[in-house]
Image 1 (tube, rainbow, N blue to C red):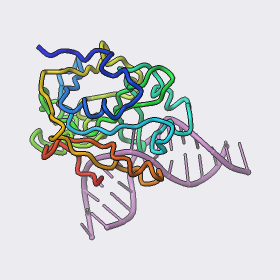
Image 2: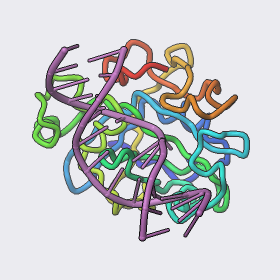
Image 3: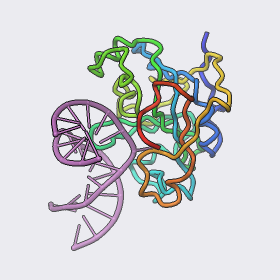
Image 4: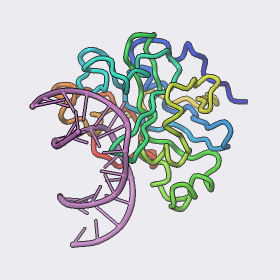
Length: 199
DNA sequence: CCTACGATCTGCT
DNA sequence: GCAGATCGTAGGG
């Protein structure tokens, strides 16, 4: 039986170790029957991180990034793609982990219908916009609780040793000055469900 | 009010 | 390799 990650798992203002620890965990849309293993993440946050949405301070859009640990920050990107983040900081501190890649575990056929690709195609859930579409994650779930809300994150006992974690630069943040070089992107080595994006 | 653009993805070249 | 899709957000006038 999988264990739902307790709030204490997220509760630290530094999203970097949380981004590492989320690799291998399971993201599940409770009422939908779709679930996948997290294989790629990126950490965002802190006063030096110009790549973070919260770098200029709190706005109505990024406010949920300042919310309690163990909640979601979900927003629309490029007018099309929904991005799913896990909030880690204590209330008032903006820190979050972007989920960038997931390996399908349950409900792959349902995901394939939503994505309009075959269930065996890596495009099913590789990439932050792809996985939210596949899992049916909605913008209105922004701020939702990951311990008892529509999206849950579980631990089934799988461990990802540090030697199996690849680190690199985050994707799509080249405008962010020195922060563009922070090695805050993490993925499971040689996992085919990691996004193709350069980093 | 108006405009520029972004933590992306696909399809076509 | 690159343009286009598509729209909420933020910042300026």
